[in-house]
Structure formats: C-alpha cells, structure tokens
Image (cartoon, rainbow, N blue to C red; front, side, top):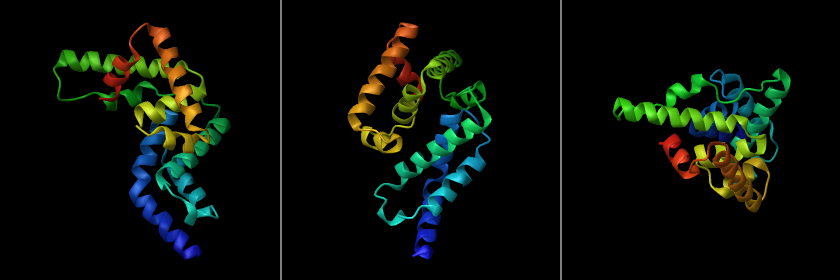
Length: 176
C-alpha cells in the first residue's frame, strides 16, 4: 500500500507541483517557497488515507495552506503579496499606458487584499485569483460553500468600501 501511495504522490507532484508553487507564492507573497512546496508533498506522503482523495489538487492546496500558516507562525511574517510578486503580473501585449494602468490596478488590489483580515484574504486568493470554485475553496479552507460565498461577498464589499470602486472592475483588471 505504501508503494502505491508513493507512486500516487509522485504523479500528483508532476501534475500539481507548479499549481501548489503558484498558490504558495500568492498565499505567502514570497517567491522563495521551494521548501514549502516540498513540505506540502512530504505531508501528503505521510497522510494515511491518500487513496480516498477525490480532488487531489484542492487537497494539496489545503495542505499547502496549512504549511504556509505554520511557516508564518514560525517566522511571524506579516506582509503579504509584496511588490516583487507584482512585477510578474504585468501584461506584455498592451500599450504602455494600458500596461501602466493595469499594473496600477493590480498593485492597488494586492495592497487592499493585504489589508484585509485573513479569512477574507484566503477566499479572495483562492476564488478571485486562483479561480477555484466555491466547492474547491470550501474543501481547502474546511468551510461550507455557503460560508465561502458569504465571506467572498463580504471581502469584495470590504475592498469596494476601501477604494470606492467597482470590485468587478478591479478583480477583472487584476487577473487578466
């Protein structure tokens, strides 16, 4: 059984390690997260009931989130989504003016997300940026779908109130 678990985790590593890496970059705001990705898959390997996993990607995101939280507790990191991450989000197929406006909107969005409480930040990253469904987000966070949807609505309202702009406009600009 252990051999099958190891093979399955190895397959998941090849299929999902980049997704886990990008999730951890969004979640932690750091780019030096190779150790966290490794720890995610080590914890997955140590899990006893791997054969019962219906959606390995969301399960791995949940593990990665817990690894990041543990790391944050150890290092007391407070800052999320720093400017170094934003430089990778600039679109290259727009005019310079459009790119500048787009990158400014992204910077504002991530600045606003950084100021939110952690539950709002979690939902916005998973749903708004990573594009997970309500069900997948609920699995990652250990919540109900209703709680995910309510928290997302409240998080979007909080951002809208902070900047007095349409959240749909900011979110669409930021994830393009």
